[in-house]
Length: 546
Image (cartoon, rainbow, N blue to C red):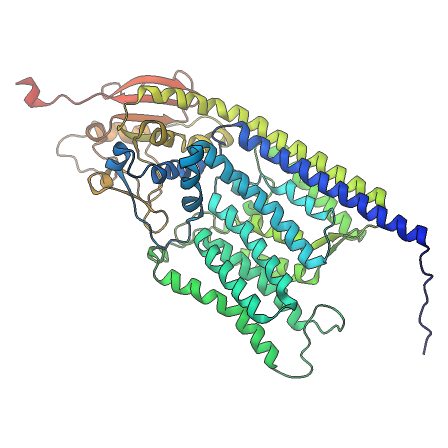
């Protein structure tokens, strides 16, 4: 039997030096977190409407909810019908804030809460997993401005963040009485349900990975469960019950939700699977985004090869199971597009929490911190620069609103040959919803899908808005419709007979100087960056001529 290896006890000065180094690193990490939190929030509060694609559409709904009973023009068009919908966190948080802060500032605060919740959730889960807080969670700042956020999927982002906090609470309570775990987990599942269904899926995926590792780990002396030769133990049954039962209320809530009506709205797009990986780093500069992604991939691979980065075994289970789920996940689920493409975004933050920086050299760890700070600041500056350019379109859109009469009906259409880049056009796609906020108008593209939103269009106007979250018509389709004879059989589109039903038309993605596409029905009022605003010329009625 070999003799145990004896180590020399550290002297007092060595012990004191170790404590000082840890304290110095702690101060550095806290300072880095503080600096990057301030930097990440600059783009959010620098622009009155952060130009994220769906965001302004959601913000318009928040305004309608906050104005319920106080704006008669909006009340003529819209009604709020509270239902059990797994997509309500923004609807619950922003309108009360809007009554105090105003719609725009309340929206900015909510975006900031999303970012703060993600960063804090990664740090909390990392600490619960590793038992300490190292500089490693700073990596999460590099992925904050991902494509899912820039698409404006606000409730998804918030639910992904809460899933991190829920899993952190589970890991922390793993050594406590099972009743505490069951109660806290149940509460989190209910909260996640009303945030977004995706959050429940991410929480379940993280729980499965962590508990799967514990269940099958046979190493004594670590945080792993041992079977002790039994097929099923009493403790294992308790663990399975505590793991599973909190999800039962979500099943019950879903059974009574109108979202179940969208259960058959499912489809796959296998060609888009690679796009989901690009969503991790895709922002506004394809070349820069690609380079940024390769730099991160190379740094991660090098760190793993040199063992400077370690991954908790449960993290490996998470990555493998997440990959399997991603491959089989539909692109459209419950009527929501890009369900699968969002998974890598949520997964990367959870995976970061399961990793750690294993280098012990104080100099190397400081270099790591400063490198993350530099890369993050470059990333935030790039987003801010792009948003400043996009905000010119929003400034023009706000200027055009003065030509719209309050209480008007606004149709949104697109140019026959859209111009502009995807990065510029995506935020503009819903910018016309500003008319709901500023002019109390009906806008055809406002999100009002049964089972997905609580915003309902009143019966008198239900037939003239998009209630299926589809694409707006182009001006060629409007021209065909407007010039159809009285006996023509027209498709049952919401915009049929548009010249009789709407007051104004926004045509998006136009080039400067584009000609009036339907001069006998439209009069140009305003030309902005990538859009034109037209007033609908009232039709001449035969009874007026008599």
